[in-house]
Image (cartoon, rainbow, N blue to C red):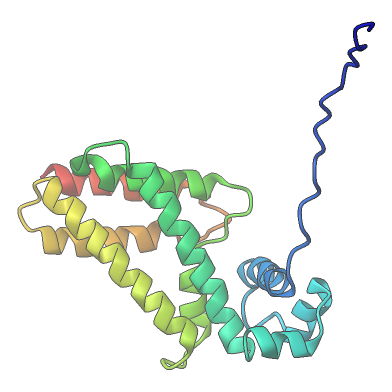
Length: 199
């Protein structure tokens, strides 16, 4: 019998399209972008729904109300920020992490879409202490203070608790958006943090 002819088969990789975002993701993506850029109070829920291409019933089923959507926006920002911070400082000794953190803040302040800290915006705009977004923001403040306390101890600060509080204040000043100062406030805060921890 003659040998079977060998047919060459081409391995063609098929690139599958990314699955479409769920309605919940579209709502949160749109709200996150608009709330950070224009403010929580300035952006009405009808605009979020229109730009997300979602019905009002979707908002109620996934978030309940605008207040809960705002809280979810803050929660997302916090989750992303913590992951970025932890990754940014992971490869250096704990004693150097506070200054490394302020290097990250300088980078953030240089980005073209930077307009300050989203948590600060929410706390300033929403005066009701019982608003769910304020509770989420408060937890992040506690997390940041705990990180600064840990890093201040590692850096050998004589009074780590006082140093941690001062670092929080420096961070607050660094992320106060200003179209005139650009990243200079962040650079100043980084310098002050270095002075604080060196003594």
